[in-house]
Image: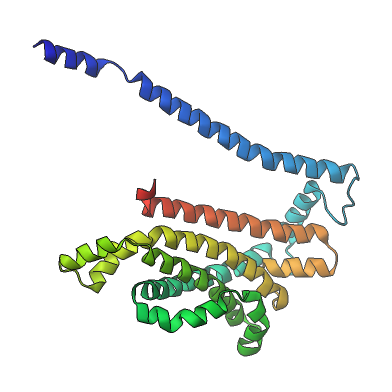
Length: 280
């Protein structure tokens, strides 16, 4: 009876230690958030101050206020006779079409090359040759082969992203513990079941890492593709603005690409955290 009463008392005592740890964790997160926000704000303040005071010629570095004014002017009037939303949607359509197809192609090739040694041997030499070559080296060839339309732009972006996803997926498959695969075979699982329930979950962290890297590379290749051949898109704004020394519009194009790249990576991180929730 006494033991039961002591347990009841212990159960009723609030867990002050747990609350203190939670409070400390929240404070640390808040501090890290403030530090993360403070540095970009400080950079923007220094940027605006140096340009406003004339310490840096605005021909080389326009002021933040000038860039914002130019952005609203383009948003209201469009650029080169085309609404700003049309430029943005054209670029996003190209990059996400290429990213989606490239991720699927890279995922399938990576799974096959990581698991089947003969398939890996068949593609190994070609992969090692292509891996150090920058995708920008193929832009002119893609334009010659597929023209200056949408196909060449999407394919060069697709090539850049698919290779990254493939390599990361292959490494994820090879990093899967062989004991798990052997245990699944012992229990009678076939190759499809092993892929679905053992190898694919183990490779998911590598796959999402590859997709995040591929997405950032895709945005960079998008700009290069639109710089060389195009009359629509955020890369075109950068190219045209640089031709006429419109530095404010050039920065508008650069910052828009940075914004959409950051937002896309953030959304991909959220999806990764929900899908690969066991990583913590």
